[in-house]
Amino acid sequence: MRHLMRFLVMGVASVAAMTASAAGPSEPPVPHNAGLPPAWAYVPIPPAAPADPNAPKPAPDTTPKRVPHSDVALTLAQIRDLHDPPDWHPDDHPPMPEIVGRGRKPGIFACAYCHLPNGQGRPENAGLAGLPAAYIVQQMADFKSGARKSAVPKLVPIMMMLNVAANAHEDDIVVAAEYFASLRFKPWIKVVESDTAPKTRVGGAMLVALEDGSREPIGARIIEVPENLTATELRDSKSGFIAYVPKGSLKKGEALALTGNKGRVTACVACHGADLQGLGPVPPLAGRSPSYIVRQLYDLRSGARAGAWSPLMKNIVAAMSDDDILNVAAYAASRAP
Image 1: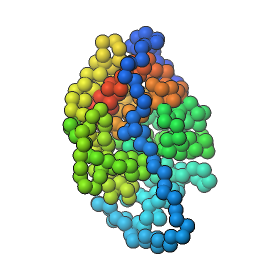
Image 2: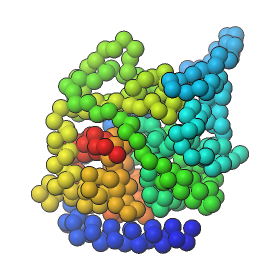
Image 3: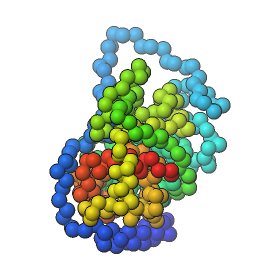
């Protein structure tokens, strides 16, 4: 633990020095189109319909479920167990520590339930595989202190993380951080430039394409949906996502990420490393969920995410327009992790 925190402090100090020299004026103007957080990134979970107390309760579905390329069979009750999440591909990762695979009762459900056993994550949360352990530890400290929140109050995934952080022990956090940091983040998201995107509905805390295949103009949005909805609903850790992004956004995002914007926006690679692969304790962005990246940039710009490392991004993100945020997120997601 002492070695981990020493690495954290040294890494933050070096990045802070680099960012301070590149960020420009201490109070950059807020872009004219710095709008409200977009609903397509901050997906609200709709309230459940009120139950009819007189309606007969349906019999539980005990049919064994399966996903491609797995010999495992699980019932829905097993799949939904927060303290024993489905592990369809146990050979795809090392043995999970107890806190990752089981959590601790009461108060902490298994990390692998939301972030998946191989750490790939989903659009409503972070892909943790391959993130620096020091970075994960610091984010948990920020959740615990209340410094890291969401620009949209009561967003369910963030509320769940706040609860986990409040109940997690320091040893739990270090063990989980080291486990996820040891994993390799794999290609997970196919980015498609398009003038249109699937019409969607909310499924859980993410967008899912309508079953009829209908489409609509994409506008200034990123629409990230499961590649195989059935497998995603069963929490298959090998079933990825498709992100539809506006035409031209990848080229614009590349310019911002690699060279910045005439002193207004610092190039992302200055801190996040060549081709956005990460640099020291600064997290990689390549191949990560664009919905997640968009949320983090909005959270930083709004001040909702104000943890120990947030000042490194304050001036940069304050100078980013909504279009800048969309374009950078699209480009980052399109890069090979």
